[in-house]
Image 1 (cartoon, helix red, strand yellow):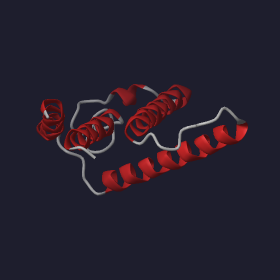
Image 2 (image 1 turned 180 degrees about the vertical axis):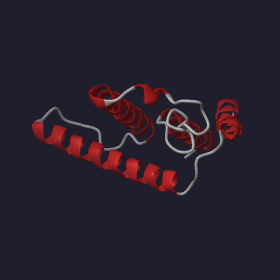
Image 3 (image 1 turned 30 degrees about the horizontal axis):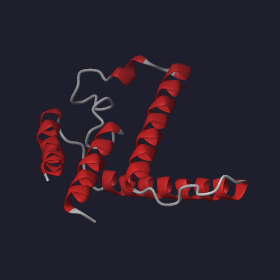
Image 4 (image 1 turned 135 degrees about the vertical axis):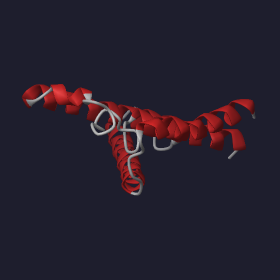
Length: 133
């Protein structure tokens, strides 16, 4: 693989992790840093729908990342068998991605609100290097 592709993979993985709202970037649920999080205004079925929407967004963002950078296992023939095989491969790739994210998320603590902006400069650096090279 080429170096710009690896740098782009790192930058996009970092952006995907931030967009998914995982630790340490889950500032919407960090009520001790932010006065009252936006999730504190909801309860009952509205809260459930909001959490379901957040989970669906995480799934879509992860699938876009996996689809762009790990395109193997796509359907090659328009048949039921090809569709089922592609579906199984996509689910396996998503499960592996979720496991990697869970491992990464559980190995670090939540950052303070001020510190998250400093950490994101690393992702910006990878993106800039991928763009320049």
